[in-house]
Length: 283
Length: 282
Image 1 (cartoon, each protein chain N blue to C red):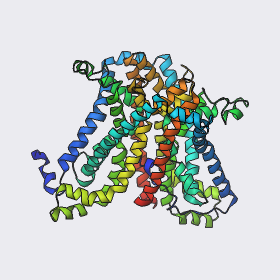
Image 2 (tube, each protein chain N blue to C red; image 1 turned 90 degrees about the horizontal axis):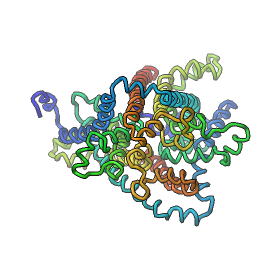
Image 3 (cartoon, rainbow over the protein chains, first blue to last red; image 1 turned 180 degrees about the horizontal axis):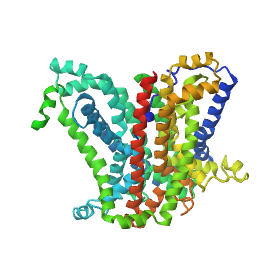
Image 4 (cartoon, each protein chain N blue to C red; image 1 turned 30 degrees about the vertical axis):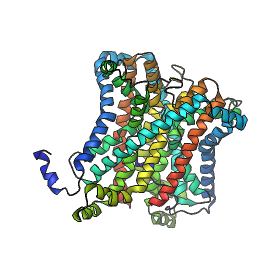
């Protein structure tokens, strides 16, 4: 899914819209608003309505449940490991592709985008076939007694797969558009590679970088399909927050499931607000 | 650096090429390419006859049929809804427009499991929508419509966000000229606007369809997951894994991977067509 569409900045400020005058225009706007309320807003509101349906105290006890706290901790840990690695990868990929010419650049860009078009569940299966007990590396991992599947490393790896393109895709087009003149000037003036990056490139891309990191965090925290395959759903051990939602739902603890979902929803909403703020700055 | 790369190196001013390219390749190879290679190797190990037996089994064919049908319904919805949203957001000003625009990103930011949970509860017999739909004889949950609903929700942004920038670039004077020449609003849309946004719209629909085929998190909640009726292909692969039938899981996953790659190619072709089209109509 080579989808620049996914990150296309909102058009609200730039569109040459005109005030709605005709009946037809009003009808279209009304239809758009009603459909969006039904399809997008209602599910959002419903999460909080159900999470708090039995009052604050039940909500608090659901959140403070040890299994829930463990899931929150595990999900945070995965994000804390994955996001910095992803930022490093994104910057490296953008620096290589945007600031240099070499054969195979196009292929490299397509390869960075591949995880977008692959279903996370397929990513999970790939990892299981590689690191699982019957997998290609299974016998070797057994010998050195390294547990990748059904443990933290597996969850981290599959999340890295799923989120791989996020930072690169934000930073790359910007670096490409800015060209290399400023960096070349800095080099001519005797700056070292690290100085060029820190003093010239980084200030130029900081909002795009932050924006990519926000998207990457939201995605890493919410990953379900891939993690579902590689985690083994071991309660209190490898249960991330999205998996905990499913577990509570299957336990017929709907209010608990919605409480877990509400924490993820808050993260998603914060990410959206940051996105709006950063887009304003970036433009 | 080898001698063959020397001509490139000669022109290179900025440092860090080897380090950045090396890091990128290492990450891609370890995290993305080797795992995919493991799946493909597994497929080769199964052998063509056994592979065909797995993917043409009755249950697998039913799962593929259900997945494709639901994805088609979801894409048809988003083709219309996404076009409407893009049009309204670009061509009209009204209070709350920025919020409406921001809401288009909710399905990307919201974890799919959360979306699935909420949609399932909303449409089940005692949910806000289910209370109305169930007595009317429209059960959404545990039917293919539920699957399509979950797919539609998770792929909402694709069409809107592909069409929006193209529509913004479209010169309004073309439409004004058509209006001046006596065209009705519908004629202006079908003869002037739609041809200009067609490539982008098709590209958006393709990515939405691809995303729907691979969706899993939102669907497992709402589908009921009944073999032959509401079992999608990704779930069947997952079930095969739980049964330790790794061949079965790998074969189904490979078919889905094939679909994804074909759609990626189609979408790339459409997007480059859209880009050329955009330059031409500017």
